[in-house]
Length: 276
Image (tube, rainbow, N blue to C red; front, top):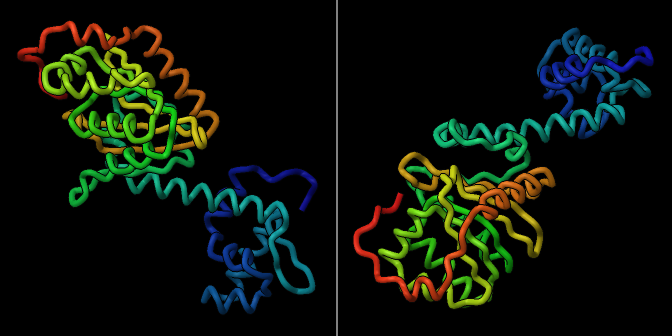
């Protein structure tokens, strides 16, 4: 091999084609015979494979046995991690395709994210994951285009039992729905000093939650066209947290706070739009 670095695409293609062989060498050095027996391949096929990997600097031969180089071990580890992440993404690909076409979310948010999708036999899985996510933090900021009794009960429970500090933004029509159907619960939430509730005239394309303690994390709630929560994903990547904070601030800045006194003075609502 020359001192010139191999083209990255050549390395990736070799990692993909020779992944079974590399898995063996990642465990321990092996000679041609061992590799041939383990992979059930001809000697010439194995020989050509290791020669290719050797030419790319991925493996080297020491005392008749092939082993991964430092570069080869690092490259295969990165490749293996990418395949694992990509496999997780493909596992929920149908769900993401159903909710993402009109949603502007940077692709990097999905890198290393933990994704929970609704299934026909377990439609509540995303909400259950969201509930655990909220229950592990003492400081919450976020927005959501959808609400309902479960969301309101969750917020009230966290406020009462754990003294969570929460800043939440939702759409104007959602506030009207809450006033019509859950006015007493909203009054109970607003009575807590740590809860600040905002209304916006903008359309919220998805739900987003930022938690700060014990560790900063971002939660993303993705809904289908009927307003059903289909996917909940979480990540702690620095890029995602920065994007999440900017996105939250952009909606929070133009929103109007829903004050406790204003709700108390308002007449109980009559007929309002139903839940999204």
